[in-house]
Length: 209
Image 1 (cartoon, rainbow, N blue to C red):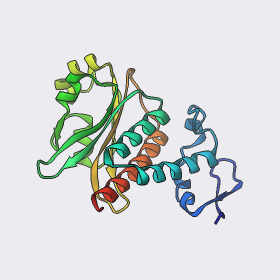
Image 2: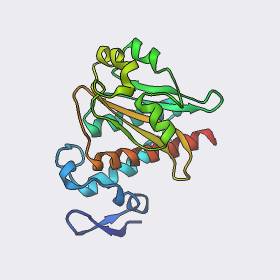
Image 3: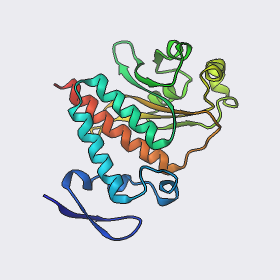
């Protein structure tokens, strides 16, 4: 059933949301960021995109397909062409890559298993349970061990967001990379965090099957 939901935070008009869509209203980025994103120009379109994202993850054939779809969607909506998703191996206490785009063998070997005390962006996000932004890997002293890997892989900045479910379960990390120095707006972090939460919920769903 279609129901009236919250007012649009941008146009201040009411829109008709399905119950599965209404909870995504608060995740909308402010218009200053949305105007630069070709696929999420309209508030209703963005809300329905989140709901469709959740449905597709839930109905994927298996976890590998779900994570591949999640990563592709995150890269599309952040206008990046490199990224990866890692899930937690709690027996080993590390992150393991389960989906990736745009990386060479050296990168995949280096970050195949990232410990909780790792100095990389994903390791820090894993440890802190919060988003980590490295605006320029060349000037981040803690990233020094990975500089050559970053140069060869062709990225200069990284955003890593923990995959934390609605029930506060940490299941992994989503990372997106850019070839240029870049400081994402807080609205982009909010957007990625909502993607991460929906993805984490899906992971938990697959593990509980």
